[in-house]
Image (cartoon, rainbow, N blue to C red; front, side):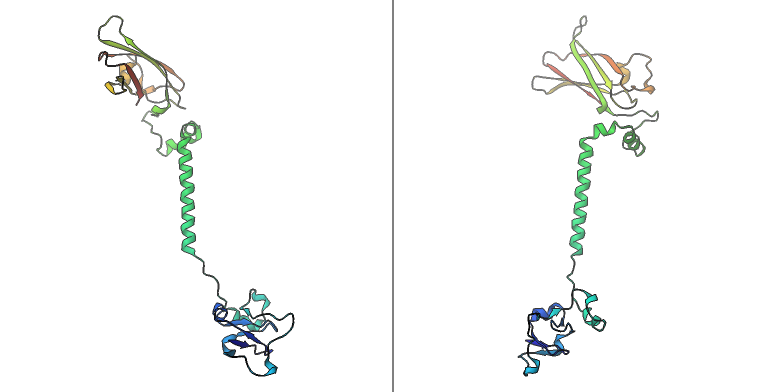
Length: 245
């Protein structure tokens, strides 16, 4: 099919896809006139030499709509409005944006969890966590962080004078940035296959000296020696484990 420019009468070939792209609006490559090609559409080449195809090295195919509205004459602005803009996939872009944000949050959470111990030791971070309820505090303002208590030494042997009694001596230190509650000591006796044979928990009042002030808590960087006595389950127990609760 063909169309003819109403201004310079130049004839140009067209295709259905070219017409559909801009809904019929085209611009003549000879005189730059924008017009509706559907109003001047021919199935066959229009007759008459006066309306033959444009000739010359500068002749080009009809331009769809127009890439720049400023390049069109003021009278052709209506035709320029017929340009078809590619539709943007807004839902898809939104989904990718949300996915990227979720991946960033997961990465930050994993990093914070991996390096939680050194982060918690920072005074500013610790204070913020305590204010927002992430680190527990008792009414006396003491922390409760068993993970910040380090076992420095431990030893277990039979009682020198009492039969059937084991003596456990250990020393631990508070590595937290503040005083915290005395921990509960859980002692587990194990057999040769690391299976528990006996287990006992010791409250602070069980291992501290009589009259100790529990409300003051275990101060920062304080090394505390402890001596405990517990029943001997026999030769089945060949090892032990200590946990702070």
